[in-house]
Amino acid sequence: MLAVLATFAMVLGIAGVGATTAAADTVIDTIQVGDSPQGVAITPLGIRAYVTNNLDDSVSVINTATNTVVGAPIPVGDSPVGVAITPNGKFAYVANRFDDSVSVINTGTNMVVATVAVGNSPRGVAITPDGTRAYVTNSTSVSVIDTATNMVVGLPIPVGDDAFGVAITPNGSFVYVTNVDDNTVSVINTSTNMVVATVAVGNGPQGVAITPDGTRAYVTNRLGDSVSVIDTGTNVAVGLPISVGDGPHGVAITPFGSRAYVTNSLDDTVSVIDTATNMVVDTITVGDSPEGVAITPFGTRAYVANRNDDSVSVIAIDQCLGSLCIGFGSLVGGGSTGSGGTGSLVGGGSLAGGGSAGSAGS
Image 1 (cartoon, rainbow, N blue to C red):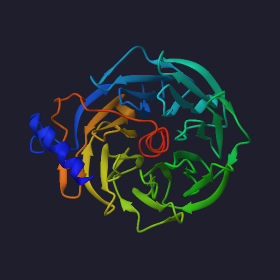
Image 2 (cartoon, rainbow, N blue to C red):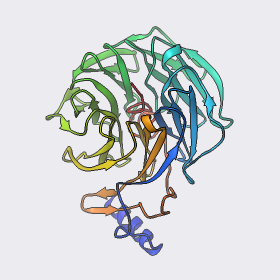
Image 3 (cartoon, helix red, strand yellow):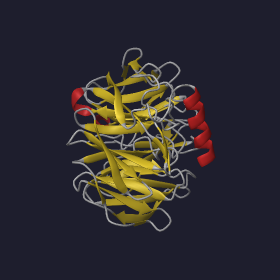
Image 4 (tube, helix red, strand yellow):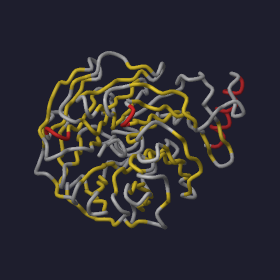
């Protein structure tokens, strides 16, 4: 892998873009979207970002090549929060909190093609890596949608109190659900759709993302200003919680698994965690009340939904493996050439384990 990155760095150097000229881990663009954006997910080819606008019941679509909104906002249900994209990129699933439904958007037409009734107060949504199921967090349960029929299958799965974030392991075997009021994470076996473990974490867990190798789940503790790390092999939190900013909300992990990006909704920053050391290595100022976050598939950009100023911040990400770091901040000035995204690389809905892992609003 180091050789691959070194070759990539050489190619960039030939093109006149090197680590010395890049402005890594900095905001390179700010995009105005709808009213109170909360969730964000990126299509598998990285050409579009879908952003839920909570207070105007719509979804904005961003062209990641130009970082501009394309078309009119897409009307969805009442109070959309989480959003996830199918692995084939054809559909976006949006959890509508106040009308207990999920809107299904055809990404080819950007029109709603189905509305699925789920449980009470849905907020998070994640799609399995094979694209066959969408898992939706309700207030105390999880609904499972068959994406072929857009119908709920089976009974709701009971989890903890105030279920919120959701992420799926890369092999599709387990679903991790944060329970805000219980300070726990429920682990669901997707073969049986039963809870097989309950993991104690910090105070007020909200976002969750899983590393690309599936060995760790990162959980934001909003009321504890920290991030808990779960060993998915033992389903036990390992080490002390990682101190981050004020009111951590969303979390996304880079494709190589080397960094976790955490939105801090109460101090308008993003904390960058080195997953090798589980220490914060950078803090980035973004917009007002950042919540949802998604990372492009090549790991060059992070898109952050800022709830209180109706915007999305675009962060240029440093590419690091050991001591080798490649910056992409100056590739196109304020643009996003080289950006891509996925709803399926890890856990179906967001790059880091779940489309709503950190994409859901409160």
